[in-house]
Length: 131
Image (cartoon, rainbow, N blue to C red):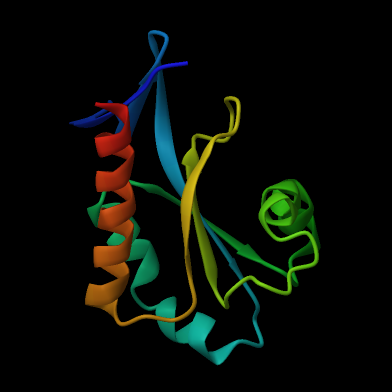
């Protein structure tokens, strides 16, 4: 399967992936806890940074059982016993209505600029591996 990451935007202003002629939007899923101080601190800017990078932002708090059930297969696929995950953990993947493809993650707390740099490095890595 050939995957191409484009700096272009779709009609919703999101980054696009083109796979066999189909367009998918990239998403950032944040797995966090309401009891985590670092998770709370990052909530002041993480959604904005994702938006600036044209990524859909999905916030999954462990205490929100309905939302967590919807996305837990992604988290448990990466961290079966959750022991190695960071607080918070951000997973970069294709739009969730299509076949799921995970491109990477950012774990733990970071300052706003560092968080943006890490997300951008993942996006640049996607492009580099597909060209």
